[in-house]
Length: 399
Ligand code: NAI
Image (cartoon, rainbow, N blue to C red):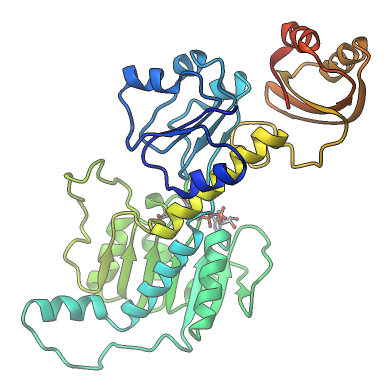
């Protein structure tokens, strides 16, 4: 019986997936637990599910011998010591794409509202002014949307924007297949020169730091709009502030900031606060009920596939073996130190017990190798004890 413990109010969709797979021994905690009770609550669990507030360090992982896999029911995984988990043979899964649609919809909404100067008009009416004018207000139809970073989110933004009648161009450092009628630009400047709205969907890190600085913002069309719901490091906020103040840009929507408040009580500090036709949101591009439900389902499905077939596809810290139909009478999951001859050692150990290997898949990542072996013959405790006792073995499980 697989014992599953969930923390931090994970969406009920996860329990539905576990139940459908026959995994009914699930204990769910509504919040994160303090370290003393966390250790106790995790005892005996084969699978645990956490979100961003539960920290799993090497010492804690070392105290959980029954644990087989970890689900981060969120996007980020830096609350888990990923290397320590890998060295204990524990794959970690997350849900990197569950909120793609939520971000894309927000960006389309912001595009439409900013082109009409709705944020500014809304604010004026709330303050008692009735500025009824068409000046500076434009339809979305026929405008050009420039997407920087045409990955999961960028390409969905493009599809939605085309449905609203926009012309879509994109710039990506990798060759990407355009969806719909989108067209690739060969340089960032080519995109900036023709876009009425520019939206960023690149990853963080050195390669994208300050992509939009004073020079690139100056290369945008006069009166155009900048949207950033990717990472706070990609836009130089002072340069954006200056461009908005001078009227070079007519609006902006910023969901991510170079430094973000750490709690609900801490206010955001930014020169953009109070600027006209500027939408500021607290990093909520991906935060919807639907994305929470998708995350619950996506991570639970990955854990179920792993526990039932050994599949580690899309694990963030582990050799990835895709799903393969089971053959043979038993399936042995063997995690070992990635040393020359490891596969041969495993195969001869299995052969010594008179077992026939029907099929075998090996993948390695850094210091760890992972083999799924389907075998015919009686796999008893003696076989498993011998496999577990071998010095190359990190962990070994039988399905
Ligand atoms: P992705 O990895 O699918 O796509 C990123 C794309 O950017 C790739 O096609 C890549 O080739 C391209 N790229 C990388 N460097 C580039 C450069 N210098 N110039 C142009 N293109 C470049 O990522 P995904 O899932 O679409 O996410 C995009 C961003 O959105 C990430 O930074 C992610 O952290 C952020 N995000 C923000 C959320 C929010 O709540 N605001 C929620 C979810 C994701």
